[in-house]
Structures are given as C-alpha cells and as structure tokens.
Image (cartoon, rainbow, N blue to C red; front, top):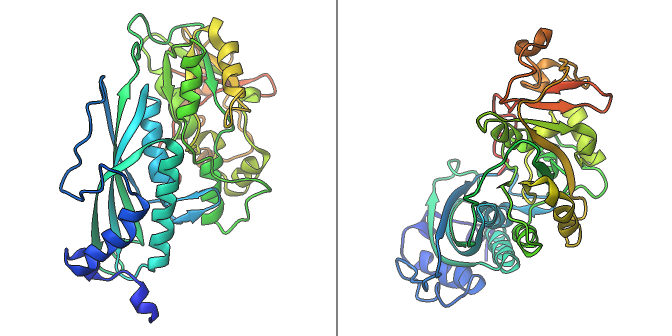
Length: 370
C-alpha cells in the first residue's frame, strides 16, 4: 500500500464505496452504540424525561494535536462542558467531520479514537454524524462540528434569584492552561514541566456542587475570552460589579512564563476543563471543599465577590506589558480613576494592594484556540 492510499481523497466524500468504507471501517466501530448502529439519516433516541438543553459548536484548533489533547477530545469535551454548565446532564452528541484532501488516514484514525475515548470518559454517546471532504488546501486537515443534547436538572437555573452583591465567585482550578499550550505551540516554545491542556469534561465538577446541596447562581466554562470574559459577563448584571483578588486566582508558573514571553495576559487565555461559578457566600466553603475532593478540582479557589458597584482606588498600573500587549487591560476611561465607583466593571485587586480595571479582550488574541 502506497502512502497515497493512506490519505483522504475527494472520493471519501462522494457518497460511494470509499465513503462507505470510511464510515463502516473507521467511524462506526470506534463510536459504536445502538443509536448509531442503523447508520440512518437521523438517530432516534428515547425520551429524556425532562427539559432539554441543546448546544452546537465547531472546532478548528491549530495544531490538531497538542499536549493534553487534540481536536477530537476538544470537540467532545467542549460540547459536553457547554451542556454541563447550563445545568444539564449531557446525553447525546452528533459529529460533523470536514476533511481535507490529502489528510493522512493515520491522523484521522487517531482523532476518531480520541473522540471515542473522550465520549466514554464523559458518559455520552455519538449518535449521528456526517462526513465531507474538501479540496487540498481548503480545509487545514480536519474541522469538526458537534451538537449536544442533555436533560436539565430540576431546579436549575434558580428562579428565586440570580447573582447579587456579596455572592462568592469560584474557579475550579488553574486558569489558562489550554490557551498557554496552544500559544506555546504556535510560537515554537517548549511548555514548562507538567503544562498540558486542561481539556476534560466538567460534568463531575457540576455534579459535586449539586451533590453538596448547593444550587449555583451562575456557571460558565471560561473558553474564548478566558476568565476576563466571564467576569465581564458577570459585571454586566444590572446594578452589580465584580471584585477579584489577583493573588487568589490559581495560574501555573509555566502559564505565566509563556505569557511573559509572548505578551499575552493569562486572564484572557482559554480553559477547556474548568468551571467559574457564583454561589451564595455561605455556600462558598462547602463548594470549594466539594470540588477539592474530586479529580480536577484540587486547586479550586474563591477569587472574589459580586459587588453593588466595585469601589476603591483604581490605577492603570500594569505588570510590565505594553498597552498593546495588555489588549484593553487599562484604557483612557480609567485615567484619573474615573468610573471606578460605577457598576458594570471588574476591579482587580493586585498583589501589591492597588487596583485596576480588568476588561474583556477587544480583539481576537489567539485565533483557532478551539
């Protein structure tokens, strides 16, 4: 068999014998389940007996393979996590695969095996799919598209109230791992010891909160936009602000090093296996204990609170990065400390006792992160 015989051709997407061989010889055996087995135009699944959560996502990450994961595991976990932080128990996924002509079949086999393993670990089934092939030079290897279905937990989201002043903001683990790994790969850097993508399902972290009798007021997985993006969303709750302590946020030294070399703010880097949650202040210690008791939550921390409008002295100080590198960390709006007492802002208390405004990224810092 020649090397060309082990690559994707346009014929693999034509709906004929090569397509059938690809579906029956690769996809079906690795993703096998009773809903996928008929290989029909749609999967017929049982009634989930509850409210449905539905999400969709596309994955174009580059490189395809990285420390701690690949585009396949990222697609499964990214979709599962969107359902989990919506308060749903993930059940079923669909998988759309767009392949580029010339892709080595070995790479495709590796990705589909990773998808199968990630789905098993996340407790979901891939029940329907589709494959298309585009000409060489028009697909960059593999693009994936998913849809996910889950059943929403009773009592979530809460109807009695949402996040309010005094509530605690928690993170389930170190921030920025996934983004730092991709950033390092793009710049030809060697990640520090032990640094790998945090790509993993967060279902167990969400389960742990509910098992501890805690109904979160807000949950989000900090993907594109990173922690800064999630905090900015929280600050936009009418009449509220956010105050966080820089020293309380877990960030690995290796992530800080990659960011120092590249000039990217770690607060803007994506995670793919973390949860940001808001809980009532009296529930914060129990929530952290519940997370720290399970794998993936060992470094959980309380990082700040919802405020009625963050107050205090706000400086435009930086950590040594230029304004361009900070990409919106501090701008003219806070010169002279104007706006520091207004709701709708994220105030970051620095390690040195000062404070600055933390803004969401104003541009795409790191395209194709997922």
